Image 1 (cartoon, one colour):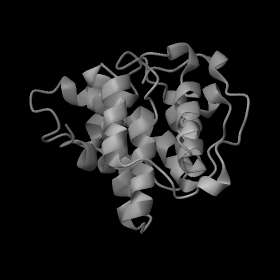
Image 2 (tube, one colour):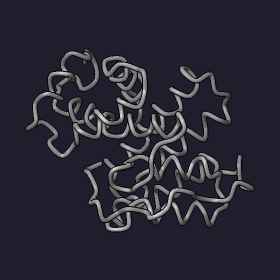
Image 3 (cartoon, rainbow, N blue to C red):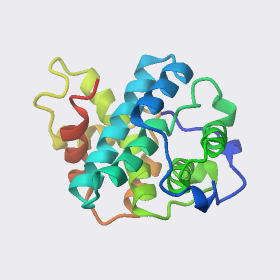
Image 4 (tube, rainbow, N blue to C red):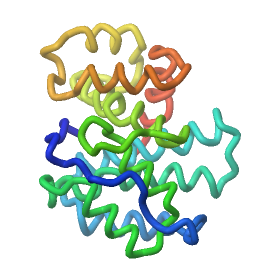
Length: 204
């Protein structure tokens, strides 16, 4: 997504009720919410891609079970759910909605922390840190795919690295945010790029 305005600070750092831990929507319910809240097909695709990458990372890199991986997927899937209809209250609307559904606070905090400079919520858990890492890079890589005749086929890490150093390409993507997110984990940028390419290329 494009970088939101600093006025979007949420003014708090705790979300939901700990008593609701392990309570969250089904995947079907999350997709139904997106269909209702997000008319823009390209934005829905971005959220589906981030959700897919989050789930894959949880399973492959964190050794998560399927239910925990679903939490990661839901956070990715819903992180921008209010962006199109409520840009001036981005994050606030989806957070309050999820709180009203008695959703696991881990998912809500993850969504709240996907842009710490804007929402004022620091990533704490690994899930928080990875959504921050994946959000901007996922969109950037997809933008690169859209200008290639073969889309993701044959895309390599080197070409993405080169575009990241080209300020005019996908200029709305904050390189500062990407660098800040990467500074919070121990995985090299090149590895993250390859992981995203591998796991979002077939998402529709």
